[in-house]
Image (cartoon, rainbow, N blue to C red):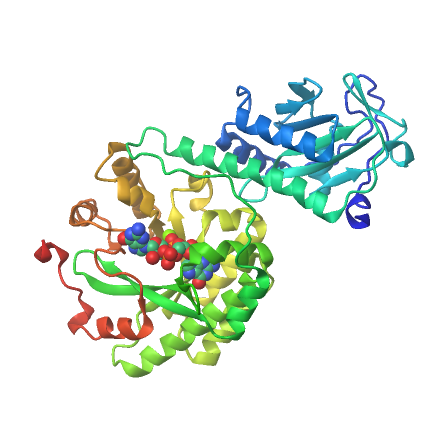
Length: 474
Ligand code: C2E
Ligand code: MG
Ligand code: MG
């Protein structure tokens, strides 16, 4: 555990004896990041709320598992740490300055101090937490889906403890992740409040057991991944305007596995990088093939990028090399990314988007409307296309609010000079409404499900690449 405890560099006591967690120094705060962090926190609606048994279950579990005297789950706004749930010492609020949270935030990860008395960074051998004289503590961050540290889950003991084993640390981190998944659920509920659709149930994330990184590596080596393609249609003509490439895993026992089942683990483990490289290269190869096969050439093919791919150095160079390897004009490739994948580092996002833009590839913002800060950045990112998340399209005909949201997004895109694609069109009613609202493009099962390349080739050979009118089939 040396790596983790070695990361602890708690500062000198700042002479604030009255502070419950004195002894920890507050490091400089990057104002811009802090504002984004506070926005992420506000979107969860967690501050100043009543105790909830869900969180109490987690602090209790921590206390039992780690035999801790006190466990605190706190979220920090500008000045204070709001304790959402405690075990042991009854505390509702702590000053943020010199707090354990502040330490976790400045370290950017877990902080473990097995013995405060032996830690050169503490002037006093104990740290006072109301009635408890703390001799050891461990604290892990609770992060937003974009990686901002919103709070910390911390265990405290009045005795020094042995160093924490790796599996103990990951237990603590898993519990913090359960808190984080609960926050995500709250965020979703808040953003959908007032919509008529019954809420889908979301359960706390259980640590993933399948697939492991080695399963993904093997699948890549054995060429078990395939790309399916789904058309994006010009709604007035039903002409295929482009395709979205969607990965599938043809598993020898499980059959065709959807990306929802393996992309999250691939992202967590970093396997998304080689998988993402494969997707990009496979898509470029397919464009090259369709370009050769058809006089009118291939339609534009859009590939989904994950956050990790995005923040890796040299993405634009990599894309440029692939385009030239397969002789694909850059306008034939589109790259889709979600807003949250850009948020972890806004400066990198601007840089990478700028470079991709200069290459001439089309940039699409995916799942638009689900992020919390959509409007803040939209006008400054150089996107060509906005894709309206299918959750809004799906509820358009059942609730007035979703209809208004879709209308607003279409108008917003028009004002910003962007094209707009409505995702997840399943009914003729939705199709008609979207057309009436001036939405230019759409995608959905009503027109075509995602298909393997060969089946898609048949659609590409339809006269004028016009898909049949679904209204005629009614
Ligand atoms: P996405 O990029 O938003 O893709 C659209 C998803 O909506 C696809 O799910 C598609 O099959 C589904 N869809 C399209 N029309 C309809 C409809 O009318 N009704 C319904 N219910 N669903 C519709 P899919 O293929 O399961 O992909 C899910 C997500 O996985 C994608 O969401 C994307 O975020 C991710 N993904 C897929 N392929 C890749 C990839 O190659 N790389 C990365 N990083 N992510 C990928
Ligand atoms: Mg997409
Ligand atoms: Mg989408």
